[in-house]
Image 1 (tube, helix red, strand yellow):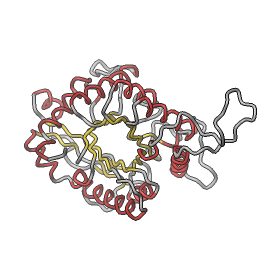
Image 2: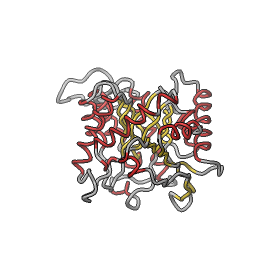
Image 3: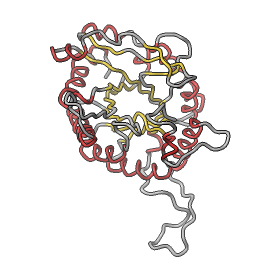
Image 4: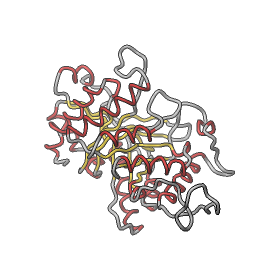
Length: 340
């Protein structure tokens, strides 16, 4: 394990029990948490994108703002649903955010998961081609984005432009050199992890995946990571691959921690269906006193296989508490496990 960051979904609700009661709260607190995480020595600030939901949805203004307020920490997404994206417009937005951040953007994308509305991507103006599924469409959009991020010109210039053009074919601007090599794919299955490796995308594996063998979640996830690394090597990429896993981990170091997370819920993997056809396995939550937590995490095979750990944070509990959650892992857990 080399890097430890956080992952926020940016939930907000007007409930009096929430510290995050509006979309503005969610956005501003996300920026403040990234700043706090950097000051604590964390390595990454990542955000999940969900449309038609009271969560974070439009990532690039947020990423640009985080990039402007921080100097060292990696910033990214985990993940953006490519069924909703225009690859060329996305390349411009991502390029701008990456330039503002000084080349620290780690952009996690995916074909998407079940959303709040039926076929929400249709409302954004997209629909699968004939004979294509929405998942196919998401992967097609992803491949188009990868192609654009190479930075090669493809558009014929106007012979009488408003402004002078450089010679040759044109590309979307701004272009951020190196961003193509910092694209990650959120894979739910072993097959899509292998597909991502062949295309030279890093792997993000979350707290759920397709239940392909009936084994415990962390064992299936570790097998997925090994399949990804083998495919990457077979593809002959010159770069080193990166792999992140997400986990809900809480070190119980004070009474507030015990009140929130010390009741023994979700200590086992869960089985469910993310759609009518796909059986999924959901990873457990880890919550224990530091010594017990360390021993539990030693047994997690997928964490051992990954180089980056993203701690999912309960953002509605406020910036100060979530900074405490991150600090407790960095201070009381990570050193004993030699994660960094």
